[in-house]
Length: 312
Image (cartoon, rainbow, N blue to C red; front, side):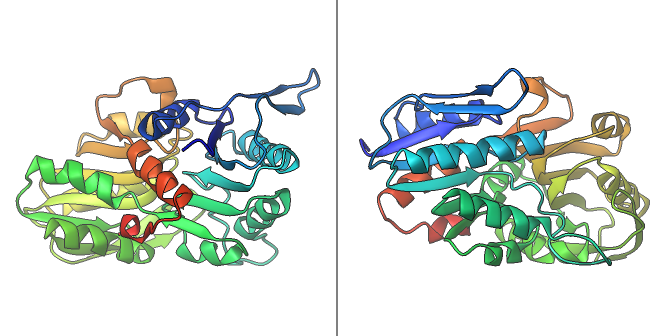
């Protein structure tokens, strides 16, 4: 492992340290700060020539700052003659605009893919993209991991009976089916009509949830409006305990207040792909670490071993 170098920006140094602990390597030294006028300043403080470099940097809020840090770090390491640069982006921001669903809107996921490639990234490692087709926006290899494994370990330990896995919309059926198959559970789908970018209305429930323990699975929770609506709909249909397993806890706006006030929601599981409230504890939210998943993937990429078994 002497040829590997793991760097981190300011987005999530805690996760980077946990990954390094799993890999049994030290976190490489880099200055990522600001000039007096606010521009991002980067300096790599150790030799990176000929190294297999991994930059841990989710593009989570503040998305613009974290994305620019990542791009500038990639450029710095490319100019420092790193042999290969892998951008490790546990949460891939700007992914919700992945197609033109309205007139005169951008495709930001493709724009960010172009920026990363132009900056000099040789490979992308990410988890639970908002849409799987975003992988095709890159002209470089993309390793796309899934959080289902880390969530399944926790959910299986609860030994819940009469379990049903709920997809909050039609687009999440594939993810929900993966959970249902692993847990030996039934599957239900919420027929949702989106009224705006922040608000949705649930029309029907496809599947049986009555007197069952429900687990809502999704890739992203922002304001929490869709989750609260889903919980209310399931409770109205006489579901028993309701939990949610959501990969990326953006939790913006009044999300925490909404979760606090939602008595029907038993528990919200998220990963640490995004730092959660500076590490503060929350009675309803459990954060599950993905450091081992990413650490093992990084090790296999470095050793030129197969990582396909980790995608399941």
